[in-house]
Image 1 (cartoon, rainbow, N blue to C red):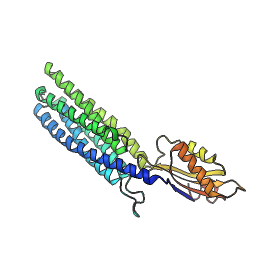
Image 2 (spheres, helix red, strand yellow):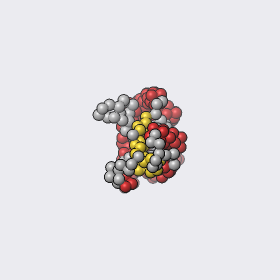
Image 3 (cartoon, rainbow, N blue to C red):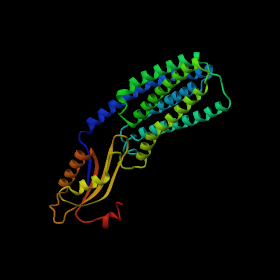
Image 4 (cartoon, helix red, strand yellow):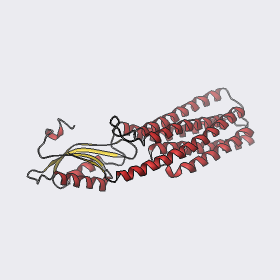
Length: 311
């Protein structure tokens, strides 16, 4: 049986760890900055009577909580493997991203509820307070986005954090537009309408993260990996007569694992190392898979089509 863990992974591992540490420091700066913005927007929303501004503050609060969780996720996911946690705590990153996305869904639903309440019991809005506070919120969001921009694709967790901030910036622009409109009109319903748009945007933006996180937890085949193509690629490896027990999964947003059984052709030379090396070379070249556990059999040890031990 061949177990492969790419030899230059120490180098890649250090690179990933450095990216994780840099991402963690950036998250810490953004957390402190957004905590101040959240307090300012909430106070401004209460004083001005603007649900849109309070909604933006609620979204920012979700940002702060999710960024705190994201910071913990970035730190813990860099932990080294142990006897108890043989993969380390890499999947904590995915857990943090899932909680972040679900918190956004909860915030979105609350905004919808509050908008209905205010439609039934209208509250006057003071744009003179609402507008400058919304401008401060937008400036803070843009600053935070610039800090995280280069790290946004480093992990699912960083992607979720960046998404929080990006959509919060868009919602701040919408709140500013409402503030300007309310200076010239008294259409308070604009405030409620923008709140509902923000809510829909929040929930919609979260669902991709939820789906991706659940796929990883349920050990589904990674996005972009065609399982049938991998199967055919292994079957085409010289010396392989049959492929069974094929499993492809990921433990984080960036690491893909594969395990399978390969039965060698009858009368083959029996050089299992050569078969494993050829299979690993094909998997890395064609699919970018570098973590593998491959068992080569000369006889069909698992019964017909792997039905007994590796289904």
